Length: 483
Image 1: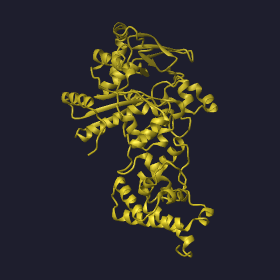
Image 2: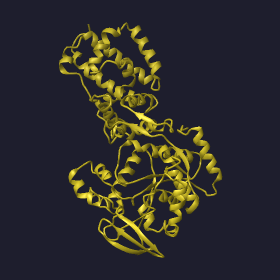
Image 3: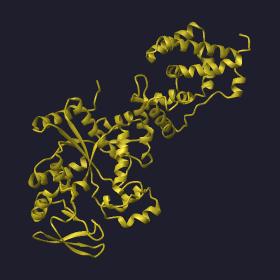
Image 4: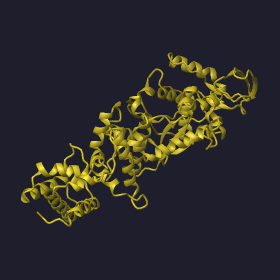
């Protein structure tokens, strides 16, 4: 049975909401803005939402997992710089699009239909690599298809009332725009404002292209201000649960509190229950290093622990977490990297024959070793000068140990490390083989640094690796007499 990272408080929140629902399904929602990819810090929201979805489905509930992309938001210059990796040529070429909706901007990399489509795809691929699979809801499509038209009617007929409500209820909060009209000429959102509303006619002015246009309520294009957009979205898609960090829960200016009040007063009353989570804090040197270095179960485990607490990640904490997170029934990820990985590389894994899990471990382990342990994990065979200078007694004792390990692994394939280590020590004692003199020789044979117990290396070594080493060290002594 899978043990989900769902604490008792969250279970109570889930059960209370579910018991009040009349519909036949549950909706868990999250949100993105497809302006750039960003580093790993923002992934906690989606992993916690996904864990909640997986738990609900395990309980037999029909659960939708929606990811709303604010693709109608205007691009800003900071987002552009991050999106194009600070490429000066692309910045110069695309800065003219700042202020326009992401969905109307060409793809800088010329592989998708639009800027937003490119980064939407990048984000979905990243989430999929973490086993987070969502149903995307594109906000530009929601606006264009008419899903939000009912809210347009409310906003344009009650604009002063909405402004007054926000001012009285949340006096420290100032909404930049209740509605962001799209300029019919230059397609700017940022530079365009509503000048007047007279019946069905809405006059809009644009400071970018200096145009003055009049459009009807039914024909106007644009988007709601962020808090209103959130309230409308909740009522259109019936979100039941959504993750929020503390910043969004501020009672004076937080998105959740204001959007909930707007929903209750103007747009239908629905608001999701809060799945609260803590922020992820880390230095710039760790940005973009975690996903290539950590398998998905290790990454998820780090981000799911103690969901309401802030996480401050350092190299030391990442390394410690890899020692605590298992990648199979015998190994932590750290054990795998320091003991098994060099030998799996040595075996020359054929990617067509091994499973996806093995490939992911090998690839992530190699990057982790270089990024966090500051060393390359390379297959290292004994050098010829070492083979030529091998002491015959040490060689015969090593062969004796390796043959014993092979036979023991075949006889006890599912043995735990503790039992293996106990049996190994008994064998060495019965065979009168001293560790002090022999083990340094074996370390040189393995090109293995100090600090990793050889008993653990022996335990994790596959039979293929043992056979390879037996073949390597037997050849030079086949013609030599036994001492």
